Amino acid sequence: MFCKLFVASAFALSLLSAQTRIPVVLSTDVGNEIDDQWAIVYLLLHPTFDVKGILSAHAPSISPPAGKVSLGILRSVVEDRMGMRSHPPLIEGASLPLVSKMQPQSSPAVDFLIQTSQGYDENNRLQVLNIGAITDVASAILKDPTITKRIRVLNMGFNNATQGGNEFNIANDPMAMQVVLDSDVPLVTGPGDVCRRDLALTLDQARTMVAGRGPIGEWLWTEFLAWYYRHVKPIRKDDFSKPWMIWDNIVLAHLLGMTESRDEVRPSMSLAMSFEAQPNAARRITWITRVDSRRLWADFLARLDLYQATHAIPGR
Image (tube, rainbow, N blue to C red; front, side, top):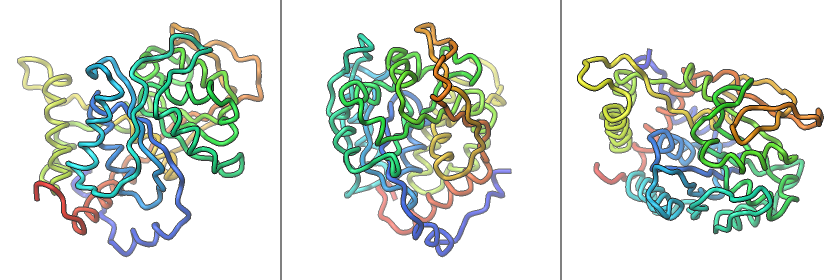
């Protein structure tokens, strides 16, 4: 399937760039896994997105201070791997989760998010893509509750839409997720079960898509391959059938109109990360239920090819 993906022409891509651009801030725990790299590349190469800034996020698998270390990895991805001399601001996020639902963590990312949101309102919201611990978003809400009138949050998290569950991004700061769920901020969530079904790549599929596809594609492939051998492939077995997920692209796919979704009453969440009933039926959540993966990967590869054909990339 992947070897036959359609690669759009530069002319067709330029038509999309003429559309109204979507103002976006991304919060990413890049350095934790491999999917963040794919999401950062896609975000920065897509003309539909007006990227206002990218925030680093903490994770227990990132060396402390995690926010600062993740920022260094983020800068390397953007400047060294993508060769971007000019790019949106890259901002350090919190290195630790919330200690209380009443006390925000301080970080440059929190202040940047609040300041950047000032130019938006309920009719024109800043889109905040959260693909790591949601600490900085929750801290911004705690520090300035009026921000919920100026942003919309699109989050990759939870195992599924019915029970919630101990999923990595949520587990890295359950209190922060509680703050977001209990606020009035519009919330879109891409759960893990949808990612497992729609955004999974086998080793062969990933190789066919990006191996040898210019310096950025080759880098994405080597990252995927290294992760696969460390975390996916069974030890001492020649079994390469198990896929791995590019989880984080689910929120970008939603902004690009490549998903299906449904609206429901927003649940509240226990610290055990299970859902509880939410008495305020007016507070809603949008669950992403399907990703058009064929369309997504075709567009991703087209953006990658066009960028590499028109820019000087390190390693070429």
